[in-house]
Length: 251
Image (cartoon, rainbow, N blue to C red; front, side):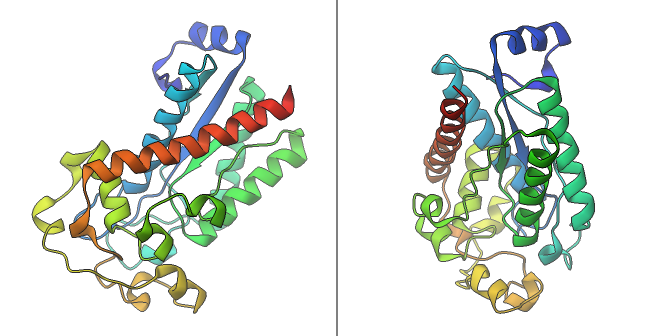
């Protein structure tokens, strides 16, 4: 598995000469309960991207992981300390310009591995991708895991919508960054069986209004590293399939 930030420029040139795809991990810096770190979404996006890159390399396809984006629209977590939310216009232009830079460098296809699921944030990704296509004619790959055909492959809690810093995300962080999880807190947290998806649709503006006064939804006490590892394989598989479909369409 290859990360762009760890390479020297001649190494990148060699990869580009034979054709190389690139994956951009996208997350946010926001509250994830009292037990998970603020960079939870970044950790998940990186885990997804790294595994997908490794799978592609095993298939003989060159691939690199770009440095992660750690900021986005995070208004729902705004009441909680440490959350750093960008305006939609800033988030869109920042992502667009990074994607355009990757395209200009010669990576193809370029894909987004996103783990921050706030609707306004996803809207900025879609807008940035539309802008890239309008200005360069290049299609950026973005498997949006909130779409039903992808979500149905993920865990029961994810599909329920009660999955912010719950069993789903806690398991993923336990798998890739266990030292960052406050286990003494996680194990004592009661379930918050409220669908954040339904709360957003009902017009609630932040986690507190939605019923998550500790910035989590779901069942974090039920999380396990084993579940996280299995879920990462599914997420990586979704990303690999989407990249390979784009490669096939370009052939």
